[in-house]
Amino acid sequence: MNDNIPSLVVCEVDVSLQEKLKKFRFRKETNNAAILMKIDMEKQLVVLEEEYENISLDELREELPERQCTYIVYSYKLTHGDGRVSYPLCFIFSSPVGCKPEQQMMYAGSKNRLVQSADLTKIFEVRNPDDLTEEWLKEKLSFFR
Image 1: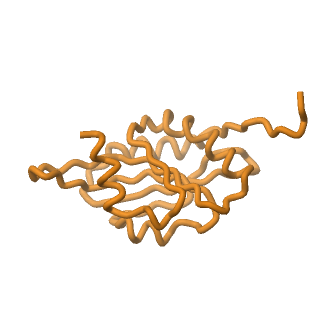
Image 2 (image 1 turned 90 degrees about the horizontal axis):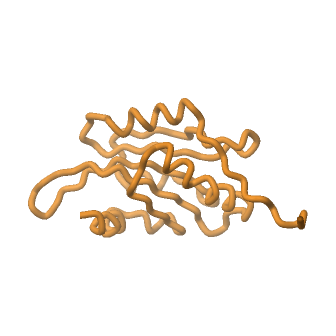
């Protein structure tokens, strides 16, 4: 085996974070909310970074670290063309250009574990945090009608 090739590390999801995501999935509030998660590189564990209630995508974009991967679960109030309202739970993997390659690999490798443990189906990736706009999200969600 070539020792120069880093093996893909898949991080576990913190148990308290799993609980929080489960509760978040069934929340009754009708505002936009987000959970930001990061990987604790030492523990190789996906952990909670921050929670936001009543946060727009524009505000959320301001909170994202510039050169660090971030996992986001976003509960979004979506008003459909026919007036119906739904609250899709979106998983957004932000991996901005300029992240360290080993960090990017660890986040990319752990993404599916997190998505499965949180039972998420609307999974999006953004390379440039500036792309994280309401138009972008609505366009992504339009494929799920």
